[in-house]
Image 1 (cartoon, rainbow, N blue to C red):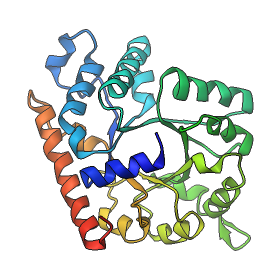
Image 2 (image 1 turned 180 degrees about the vertical axis):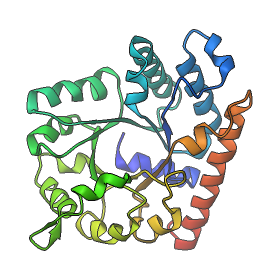
Image 3 (image 1 turned 90 degrees about the vertical axis):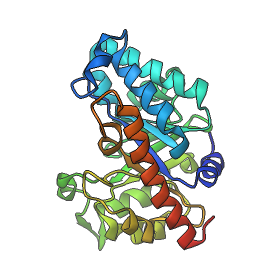
Length: 275
């Protein structure tokens, strides 16, 4: 996968939607519990019904780890299904890993090589040697936490450091890592005031933007300063789409929600005359 191929998919679908597969075994429709892999069957139905409206899928690894061996099996089935049936769609392992170098090498191997994801989210707290192992894989990406959408993000990310915010310094430092062209960045939708600052540092990088919808982020405000001339943004929505219904029609309702996002994104692209 390359940034150009992601951009082509955005242009084709008139969408920059990423769907988060935060699949909670306690929330999926009851009739799926009778199948051999309920989590995978839920994901498969969501993917088949929504793929025409999105350009990326993002399983949050915690939801799979919480189900133990069966969860990991469902995750493997899900990523294999995506790679075999929808190889044009960008895949993100939302794992938020980041540890000393040799440990990060193992995390990178698991998600980018063994499981076959296109990218993995990482935490920059331990510095360059905790991130660079993820940047060694050609056509694979590390998506680095920068500004997150949770309430507690203000505890550290907004701290003043030599007339700059900590998140600014983190981005600037990351540009000196090995293979910085394989970095993308997480920027929460609930902090739209920072997109202009971030785009001044990384005008061409892809941004993964969680927090639109249930968490209160505004699509229009994100796009005002977050989009570049190639779009360069992946807007994630999870619960609002995948749990649109808990009945037999859950997949159809998820598609309706995803289509609503796609239509709004298409209108924004038309207004900004990007495509």
